[in-house]
Image 1 (spheres, rainbow over the protein chains, first blue to last red):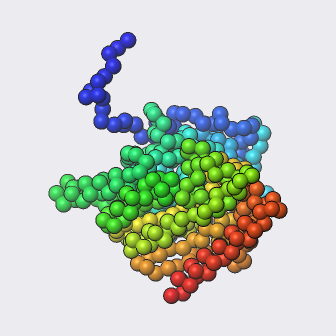
Image 2 (spheres, each protein chain N blue to C red):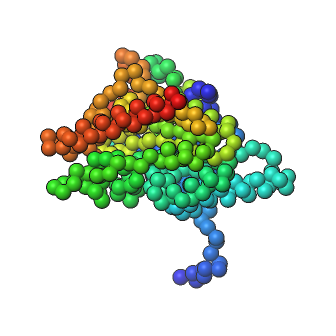
Image 3 (cartoon, chains in turn blue, orange):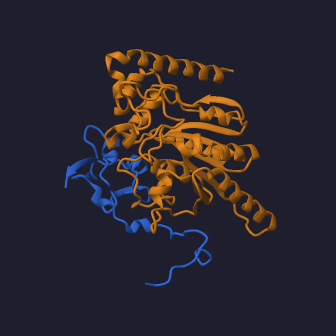
Length: 95
Length: 306
């Protein structure tokens, strides 16, 4: 076993590199349902994007492009908040 | 005000892969507040769900400079950061404008961090303090806090034979902040994103200490289905349980006046933490809660009319 550092040798605080949580995939938290995007209905209002807790609605140049299933926890907020009528542009479906 | 499309091309302050519950409410609050700033930002957080879930060693979900110190001193820590920035400005070591934001839960803001928050507001540091208020210590398993409303079931004041949830009413922290005579204090909720983004933008346009108190439903402690986070928070504003207003230099403005004020039972029914109140024995508590909400709403409208 290597020698443990004493208190003088320890760094003054923990420093974490930015954005490293991306490597931790929380997609396996989903309980059997995932959001599915229907681009033909989507009006690109971005309400799903602002409402997503896990930054899992991917957008590019002000348009929605789909989901990041590696991190989506399947909470279903996007499908509930989707304002299109009568059919929603996002539905929760069995995986 | 920036539209959602404009906001969506800015840099999201958080990445996916943080460990907040599915259906949590604070990552959206962080996104709405941080993206409202056009200038670079520095974020400090009190101990709480936000800090714990976004910075689990060795991972960090933050894409912006982030600092955590302790539970009770988010405002003091950020005061120091802001003072150092001012010193650098004076010495010419830095030239760009930077916005300073502190995030604290209701535990770290209403109770444990109140002294440091009050100090920072009194000293007049140029910072924005945002409280993501989920009305109990959710991170450590739903103990009551100063923000827990009357009648709510918590693990330290559970509903049972002796008590029907919390006996006392919640403290009005926004009013305490207004009493510090700061240039901007506001109350918002996560479900009304446009209101929150507008308030954050306004806060960034003002110099001096600013405070926004944001109600955030917690699926774990409030006990509801995870997809209802945004709709329940809107219900809180529509029933006037959590009025949306701002106070700019002492002038009140109510930013959401529901066309039809919904009865409070609609809000209480949406969450299991209030389930015991619907026992016929507890009807008087429901009447009391409605009375208090009506009284506070009228009081707020009177302040606005002044």
